[in-house]
Length: 240
Image (tube, rainbow, N blue to C red; front, side, top):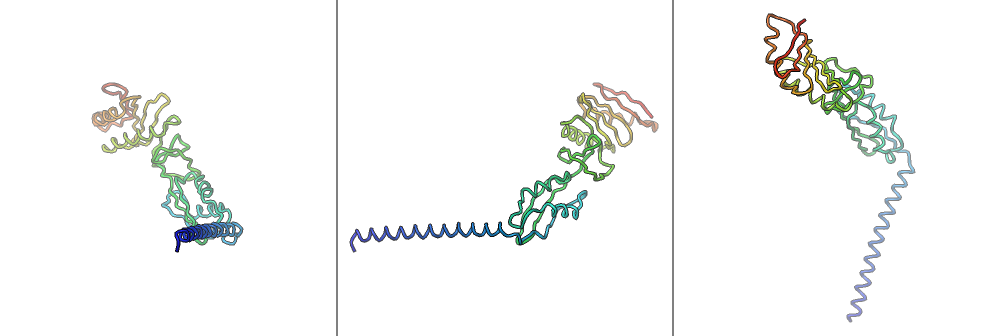
């Protein structure tokens, strides 16, 4: 066999391989498109099962499933998961949601419920991250602290509450209401009925001053009404 014959044979084999490879790719693409077109043209595979997972305190699982069913659009193949996810997140009590289709006719929805931490400015709620959301007609416990402050200061007020509550509860005090005024001055109402005026600075040291002097203020079973701590040292107090 001459070198020229070998060269032609190798070239022919290479071309056959290329043709075979392109043929395989063609049939794969054609098959995919055919399957996709078939799936889009058929509407006989509806989603007939919606399964919702999550730990719920305020959300009603059955109502949530029913609401999701009403949002289903198209068959199993054509259902837009991203659009459905956006629709579920419109519920203010849904903090996060993940949706997955499961062959042949099931949709699984994983929901993270908002954690109501406090009432904000009387008509809104704060979650544990300081994000505002609407109660949407859902009743929340009266035991939730009531926080007030200028719009945009939700996270600062929440952090202030957490810090001061952590200190106060060590001495059996609990905050029922906390206010950050427009001038950024802090006020606290304890569950015992005592009002603390803390001013704009050094709020933690002033809370500690109240704790240190409270035994003296409540001596002889006196019921403290207000304590003004807006001083570098000392305080002013009134009793019931």
